[in-house]
Image (cartoon, rainbow, N blue to C red; front, side, top):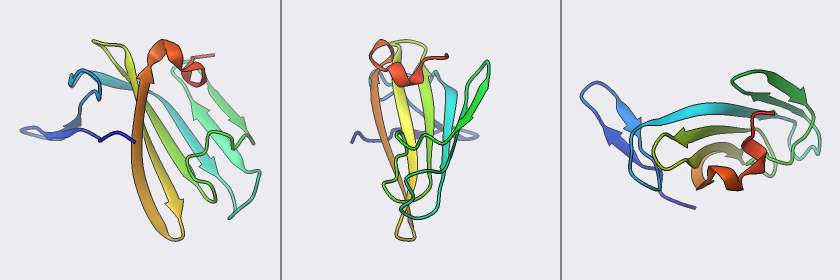
Length: 111
């Protein structure tokens, strides 16, 4: 897991690219996973720039047991993708992040 970089600005806090430090990152995909505790199936909704997909695929869920949320960001400068994952486990909500080169991540293609 990498460190989530948040800087304080004059009006709002802002996220920074994990790779190059740029503040010019854009969210371009949201994945929401809803399911009952320990269920293998549930509802997955993926919102992209051009369309929305709803299915029962839980494979990308950041939580092993409950609900999860993943936000995907693309850096304008270095083209790294940063992901913020929000997950629930035993009544606690966790936040974690990771990143990869945009071309190395098939799951975040707009298709």
